[in-house]
Amino acid sequence: MLRLRRLPPVRALLKSRFERNFPTARGFSSLCGSYASFADAARAVPPDVTLGYDHEASAGLYQDRLDAIRPKDYPALFWLARAMPEARRVVDLGGHVGLVFYAYRRYLDYPPGLRWTVFDVPAVVREGEALARRRGEGGIDFTTRVEDAAGADVLLAAGSLQYIERPFADVIGALAVKPPHVVVNDMPTHPDRQIITLQNIGVSICPYRIVARDALPAALDALAATHAFLAFQRHDHRAGGTNTPHPAHGAGGATEPARGLQSDAALVGDGVAGPAPLTNQRKLMYGVAVTLAALDLTRAAHLFHALSDETRLGILEMLRDGERCVCDLQEALDAAQSRLSFHLRVLKEAGLVTDRKEGRWSYYTLVPDAFAEAHDLVRALATEQPRGRKQLRVFGRCCG
Image (cartoon, rainbow, N blue to C red; front, side, top):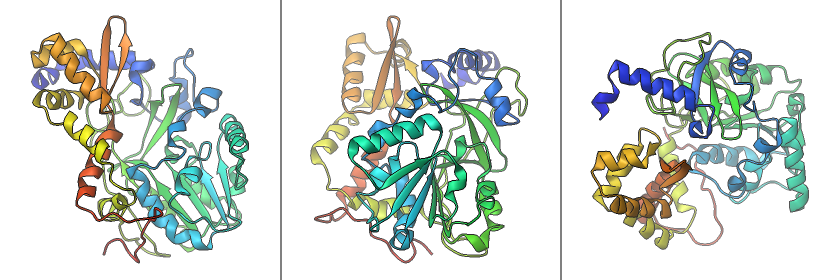
């Protein structure tokens, strides 16, 4: 099957199908195209498709993240825990409705009187202000002016820089008063070049920047006298599958799919000048973070039961390449429909896959966070669990 997919005619057919499906619900979370600028990328979005984050549907996204953290949050938590004790004002660049503010306070001690300011687009700001009123939360405010970040003690960008047209170093450089602490997390990178592409976020399509791996640290090195902390996580868009940028619509820029996108550990530590040391994300996550919550044995049993069958593992292996129709799974696994339906139901109930209907067929996709959870559960089995309040233990350095 995989050898067949590599044949040029088959690849051309798959590419055409991918580009046709990209603006639809089937293209959710995928990337498409390579463009010279954000403006070029925006012009490539079909006129009948919503563009960007500045509308009500986008403002209503991510409600499940308000009170929960994910594995990729731990590098930011590590560095924020060091900067927070002396902080009086945090500016959260692209912080949506305050997702980080609400989720991180379970693990960080916010100083008395701390002001947490979120910068975002107008529709998201309106929703964030309404949410704060509903929750009776007075410690957070919102702005649509990036200039308001001047004078902040901590400038945080967690999973947002890829959607902001202005380069981050330029944003900091233009501030009248530079922040002494800068934390960047969840940043997509490429080994050697910048790519501007489009991402389908479900309710709209957004221009999306993948930066050259060393570009951001190099740019911030020029501002070394004005920042003390820098920590960011690089994440991966796998070569192949629906998460790799593909050329589209004859747009300018690269004409081949991006290759070599990396999934590296969280990077860059403290230091006022010169190259900053690395943050070992895996050591940080699994040496510290998995001890934050008591092990849920019932959930662990549920997950591991779903992973204990050879047919179910075969299904998961096929879904690694992206969404698959149940008819494709049935043919590839040579399984009876009733037997396959049973195994898919077990995987879905365990939260390992999700499905959607299109006509008479169902299409299945992996849920990456469930696999991260399973990994954490395995590590937690061998880790002593703390009692009482959840705490993030902070060491002087997380690696040499």
